[in-house]
Every structure is written in C-alpha cells, then in structure tokens.
Image (tube, rainbow, N blue to C red):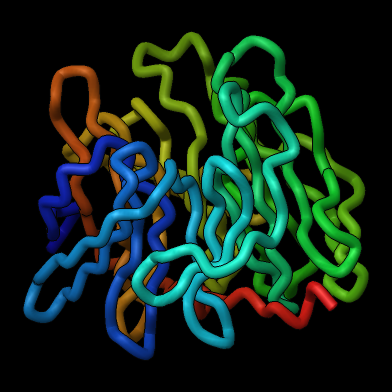
Length: 288
C-alpha cells in the first residue's frame, strides 16, 4: 500500500470519529447523521454496525467500559451496544440549530468536545471541557469546532474552526485543565480551487498534527511549528478525520463523508513511518 487505499465500504452519510480499540484490534467510528456505530476488524476485514438514537458526532472508549459520546442532545455514556446509560451534560444550545461534534481526551482522561452551529451564520458554537466543574467553555465564537488533539507532552491543545479555514494552537495545563494563549497554528486558503478546510485531526508521537481537509481530497501533516510537511491525497472528496491504528499504530485510517456526487462515505488507510499516540479513554473519575 503506497497511498491511501479503500479498506472498508461503510456507505456513511458522514463518517467520523475513528478511534482504535487496541484490546479488540478494531477501529470504532460513527456515521453522524446516519446514526450508526461501526466496528471495523482489519483481520479479516469485516464491518459490524448498530443503530444509535440520535445524531452522533463523537465517540471514545470509557475507561470502565462502554463509551462516551457526543450526541445531539448532550454528552452521554453508552454501553458496549451503543445504548444510552447516563446523560453527563446537556447540549448548551438549541438542539434544532446545533449539536455536539468532534472531541478528544486529554492525558488525564478529561473530555474536550466541540459543537457545531448548523446555521453557519451566528458563530455560536464552541469548544468545551467536561470535568468536576461541569461543562465549561474554553473557546467561543466558533462556527464548527473540529480537530481536537493533544501534543504528546500534554502541554498543547489543538482545535480547528472548519468553515473559517483555521487551526488553533493553545497552551494547555493537564493538571488543571486550563486552556490559555490561543493563536493561529495554520490557515488554509479559502480561495483555493478545492476549498479544502480543516476537519478532524490526530497527532503522532513526534508531535506532528495530521488534519483531514474536507472537500480537499487529502490529509495534511504539520510539524509543531505549523510548517507543512506533507500532503497525502485520497480518492474521496470529503475526508473527515484521521486516527492511528494497527498493532504498531502505523496505519493512518481516515473516515469520509458522502459528497454531493454520491462518492465517499467509506474508510481508507495509509501506512506511515511515524506511529500515532496510544488512544486515550475517558475517565469518569474526572467528573468527581
């Protein structure tokens, strides 16, 4: 495999939130508006799926079993079958105009999760931290919060605002959960012919940030200073989020959305030289 190749036909409306489950050797991902939770087993290459009750923008394993998920109505704990167990925090907005979207887990097991302003007009979305203090806004004035990822040392938090073509870098204190010093890390050209814009992301062990460019048919890699290191095309117009998987974390999986021409919605993979960070699990203890 020399470039991105199709590894699973998932036919997602909006494939998102891939995460590697090392203990099961499976990739978990969702179909946001198709309301499905998928599990892909690279060996033997099978896909199993279950329905969820609402639009689901984000999912991650929970340390004590099941999953934490960002649904339209709020942040929920789900059981292993995708059924609701407990509401952790309601959506801090009108669910007819917004929902939870991309998220990430910090080194201590806290959840950081963003929202999307579906009107694409008001910029009322934001990025939130969930811990013993409840759901706390750490960045506001966002249209679509995406690209949440942490540097290997836990001292940097990244997130993007997709419709504004910008990725931010913030200073992060993993002990307190405080986010400070937000500044522009990278900015895409809104006048580019493909209008590729930063969607979901992942950070490898060297601290490089991999971003899926929605409608850009590629994934890009930046070093920690924001210098573009490489571009990796894939045969789908709307990549949504990358995640590292495989036993050595050297397979970069990417989910995609179905484009206007009906293409996409499947899962792709690329072998890489630098492994990703081990996936983190949400810890309910951070709520106490």
